[in-house]
Amino acid sequence: MTLVVNGYNNDPRELVDIPEVRAMLRQREATWPHWAYFFNQVDDSIKLLLSCVAGASSWAEGRSRWTPIWSPPRWRVASAA
Picture 1 (cartoon, rainbow, N blue to C red):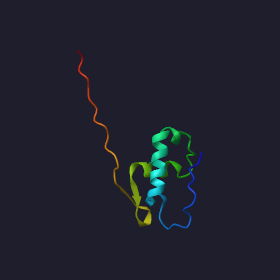
Picture 2: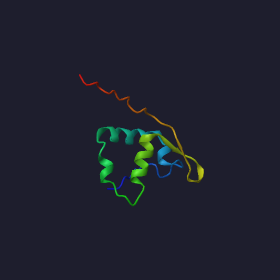
Picture 3: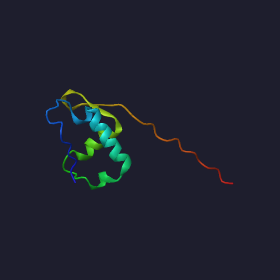
Picture 4: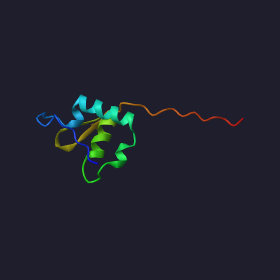
C-alpha cells in the first residue's frame, strides 16, 4: 500500500509542512495505528506518516527539524502486594 495525498500538487510546501495534511494523518494514525504495517517499503509512505505524526517539518536541502507533539506516557510500576 502506498500513501498518496492529493490536492496539494501546486502547493510549494512539503506535505509535512501543511497543517491539514498533518492533522489528517494524525487522525488516521489514532484511528488505526497499525496501517503503516501494510505500506510499501520502496517509497516514502512510512517516512511521510511518521514525520507528520511525530511533528517534523522540513528545511531546505532535505534537512528536517523535529518538534515533538506528544510526551511519552509515564509508566507506573505496581508494587507486589
